[in-house]
Image 1 (cartoon, rainbow, N blue to C red):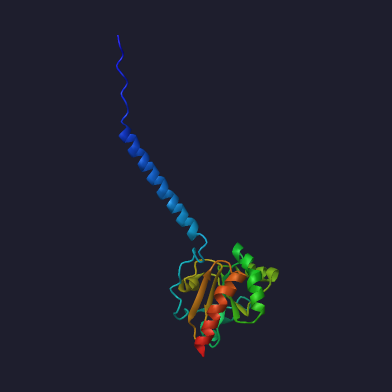
Image 2: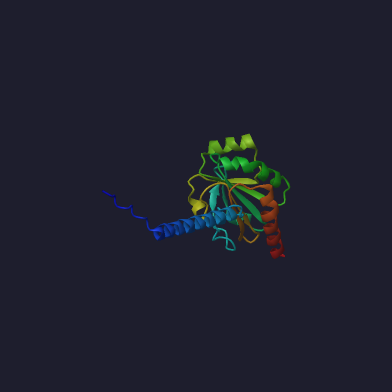
Length: 195
């Protein structure tokens, strides 16, 4: 008795499945290529600050080294300043600290430290260990004032001009390149606009 001949698979279905798989693979490769192209874009992790070009939010905070004395934003008016947000709990703050310290020594602009969510003893110990490049350090132990500034972590750095307008913000550790390519040009523009 003869056996029935095996059915031939439909080659059209295989071709269609192959085309679908090839298109999926090409699309996936295109998406990966786009991701790689975007990965070296400056500021890719940073959300644009809604404060840029607007008055800096007022604050009234204690000084880290003199907790009985309070300091306000109004006292900084008249000259630009850089406000660097840091905490002893922040590993990236340790990475950027030598860079901040070196630039602060140039006295090109006033550096204000903004200590965020840190017990006073920890913050003082950290500055003693790594050095204090700041003209003064304000302490926001609760983190409430940070909300007004749109601060969601550390390190973050702001440039505020002589009129109290936020001109620049950087999220993450500051490098020599960021100072040269972003901060100094923003500072020069703020100074030129003042004249």
